[in-house]
Length: 153
Ligand code: CDP
Image (cartoon, rainbow, N blue to C red):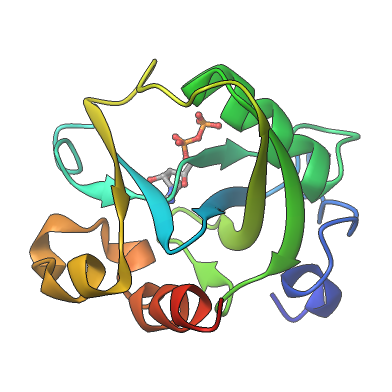
């Protein structure tokens, strides 16, 4: 994260390339609609299956974070979103990737779990009621940030 300090707040930030040229950034979307945020339950790998996450995935070479976010949500949920500001602090993943979360707003389509086991809209109260064990480890620290974002609107 130190090499790319702007990316947390700026969805237009360029990806942070690894020595092999492949970006090492992962983007995740906090799709917010009124007082709810969308979480999706991972289907794989086995260790994470059934746990809730902000949907997203790896940034491809040449993509901005915002472009990657829009593509991932199209692929995973079949909906069009617009990327907004960063939310929470970027998280270093055990595999050397860095995970960045951004707010996102639905532009068209109805999100559906195309690659996840399930998706669900959560209010702040419902987020707080979630057992931490049921959230993927990297995303757990963002729950308070998500609650604040939902309650400020
Ligand atoms: O589909 P793609 O391979 O691009 O991405 P992914 O497998 O969904 O995510 C890449 C990495 O980020 C994996 O290690 C995921 O576990 C992690 N990730 C996460 O920890 N939290 C998220 N909200 C999204 C991805």
